[in-house]
Amino acid sequence: MQANLVSFIQVLRTHDVRVSPAETLDAMDVAKTLGYADRERLRDGLAMSLAKTPEEEAVFLQCFDRFFHHKLADFSLDGSTTDAEAAGQDPDTGAEPPSDQSTAGPAGGAASLAAAAEQDPALQSLLSTPLMQSLLDNDRNELAMAMNRAAERVGLRQIQMFTQKGQFTRRILDELGEQHIRDAVISLEQRADPALVELQRYRDILREQVRDYVEREYLLNAEGRQREFMEDVLSRTRLNNIEHTYLHRVHELVRKMAKRLASRHARRRRRVKRGQLDMGKTLRRGIATDGVMFNTYWRRVRKEKPQILAVCDVSGSVAAYAKFLLLFLYSLQDVLPKVRSFAFSSHLGEVSQYFDDYPVEKAIELVNWKYGGATDYGSSLEDFAALALDDITGNTTVIILGDARNNNGDPRLDILQSIYQRSKQVIWLNPESRRAWGTGDSEMLRYQSACHFSAECNNLRQLERIVDQLLKSTR
Image (cartoon, rainbow, N blue to C red; front, side, top):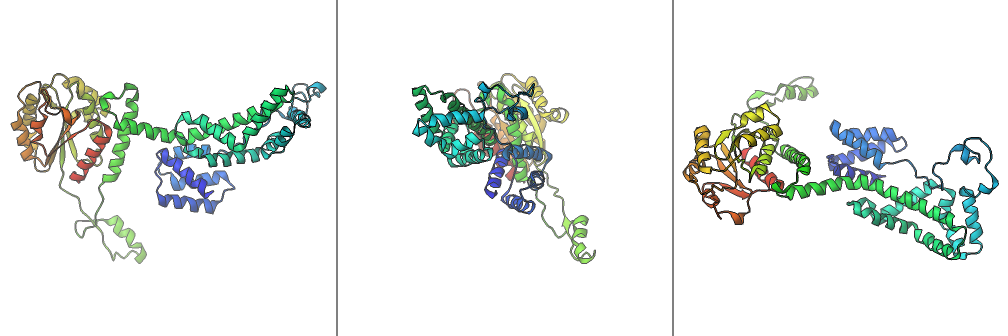
């Protein structure tokens, strides 16, 4: 059961439920204390130790019910057999069935196979195997355990793609010994034996139950891995190449990345010896000494507040990249310092108010509509200098996202150099490949001389890495 519990926790992790090694040990202690006899009590105990939010609890309950699937498969020839039919009566009239139908049920099938086995030593050997005995007796417990053991041997829990379902179904059938049933079917076909139909039905019900078992395991184990694989592909794909049908998944991925960065860079309180008295902590620590406050604890608020100025080119060639940079920045409001946003094509304007008045997606849509058009970096830098140059200090980070293609206009490098001298750092993110910098009407190589850091940035993985470095520098 400990191995099963570890496998279950791994399933939870693939479904975005965060479980640390310490919490895994806690879950094992819970299982050991509660035991495995009462399924609901074990489920509730594990939920309290592993799920930390209502959303995680919902995922936990769903995964628990699917992982510890307790319903046994029915290997009888007729899985819909009612109590009346099991008693040998007609389900409508209650009368005994005609004598010529007595071979239609499992008992009749076993009898016909036994009769055929008298003439076929190979079939007689097959009927004596544990698999066939369990099928004839409809021993669900033994068959379910045999399937579980076969699945463990072939590594079914490593299934990742739906194309592997057929492969794993065949491997499990081979582990169970279904090859012997196939050989016997071929032998009966060659002799045109009447028992062929009964053996084929046992073979088909075994295959059906194994397919269903593989399908359940695929939905449980591969769903999370397939989502991880898809997220990895999307995070490495150029943002302007992502199809519209995947945009909602990209938005979810951005929020997940932002949440991960927020958790990593959340401001940690440090113990200080002066400042404002932390009364709550001081009183709690005084409980052990009957309320006498031998130890005092202090807290101090940092006055220093860095700011970030995000300047985004929203012309047609780079609008998609600007959209996701802004989505990233505004998803990190809990840990980022104050962000002021500017958008430009031929002219530039501050768009911070849009993000205060509208949801992020709607604000980005309005920004693209208002400031989209042909690009003029020189004119836009002039507008930026008029709006924000006086606000830039040694504690300001300026992020510029654009391809630096200026349509052969005046780049106004002098303004960017002035920003460089005033600010803490100027970061330029260019969605074009480095090999294209400086070609055609690109002014990137000239602008690069007035930046503290410049990088190619055209997918979410690169964007996450750069924002991570930005958060480290602004803490």
